[in-house]
Image 1 (tube, rainbow, N blue to C red):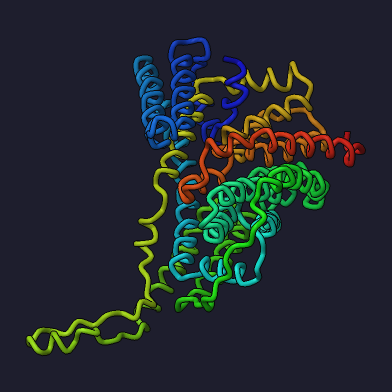
Image 2 (image 1 turned 90 degrees about the vertical axis):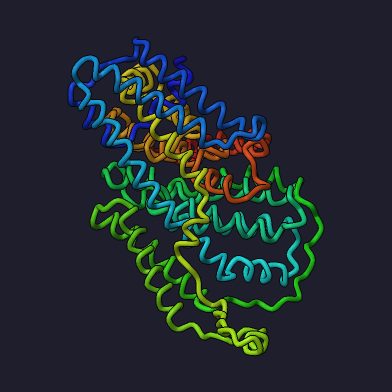
Length: 471
């Protein structure tokens, strides 16, 4: 029981703490608390067994979260405190809605770029260079590592995963390995930059570490990426993909869509850092820009007459006009978003939010930073990010106000940032690609967890070595 709580109990959306101050009851030794933990375990095991039981991962998570919150709310209602429980539920729901809007806009932009031929053009470009599969493996991983320092890891994962999938259509094992590499690279790259990850941004905004301090994690993060990639390298096919003779053709407006996506990310980061707005605010502004550009393209699109116009005229029918296929529908691209992934996020956040509201957070804080060595505690918390979101884990630790120094905060930032790479469901890039790329599965990622775990401990060891002055 205690091991599971260490792994999952820290995931508590921020507003839950406000609800707890409103006479929340400690149910850690009550049947409701035990039921919450049991349902969370069952839901997670069912989600992880998606390939075996052929049940989409969102279904057990959504149902499990509903049952847990109903149990909590019923108990509170029986004691005349229904409002306290409902406020806790609403705060968790608000945290999820912010995440939903962020992911929704990211996936919409990526779906739009795919529809405009951006990924196909990138695939043709890479193939035209006659890179081998092994070279493509390192190219996609390196790009993910570098870009994730300034761009959200989910967007990078979906982008580079789509490129790997397009390049390796005839080599499914290459696609799966490349996706694992992208997950590790995106998480590692976003760990040593305050702009690259939610957990690092939290630490920076709280004034615990200065902007330049995060770059002390650059070498450990490189080690975290290179170690598992070097092991996987030998399982990548040596041959070279077929050279594409097709010219690179982007559909009308493709370059503007890319520019709008970059502008959206800039707006998101700036509004979050300087205006303290949630990331969803900037992303929704970007969605508005995309909608207006969609309107412009549709209004200025040329029309051509149907190839069968003469047939319609012969029978004296109205001749239909066909768009030149240079228009697109934003809402159609929104509809193609992977809703199973988004609902999985809902279940995960609501389940673990319930675990926190029941009262396990205080027990964990006392256990982790009161009875354990801080380094061991931070390493364990990092490992727990393989199961839950690292940003919320970091916020939970910040809310505990642990008495640790700068070196330990750097260690926590490192472990939380790269620990999510251990499992496919441990980070946003992994969860996002689970729903988008069929070759990349939870089971396949799990088989390579030992290599990723080796990189995890190697990066921790390098951090203790090169940043010894902080300890």
